[in-house]
Image (tube, rainbow, N blue to C red):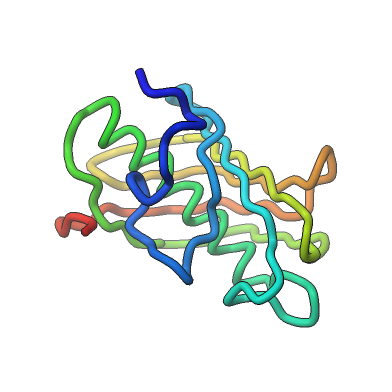
Length: 145
């Protein structure tokens, strides 16, 4: 099996620059997926030195997509498909991440039925929880390019 650090995120995510909000897949065990993302100056959703709330949400969504992309490509050996956010519930943003900080995002699978996934997302910087939400995502039919 390919070590996580050797997997280019562009292989498991349908998003492309400048709209990438995941730098690496750090782990996957079927229930929990961990990703990392370092906030960089000049990034699309960085404003006044901070990643805006929409960027934090997009990081959560792309971390969820990384879970599905890894499962598809490396375990099921099927093409990565484009997905959609169906719902965001209980989003709590405790603070915005600053340029230079690295987000560690945990995606915990709660349920997965017929291509619809319910996950809990938690974004940390070090040990500090900066955001959390429950996401519902659905897979489309179109394959990522």
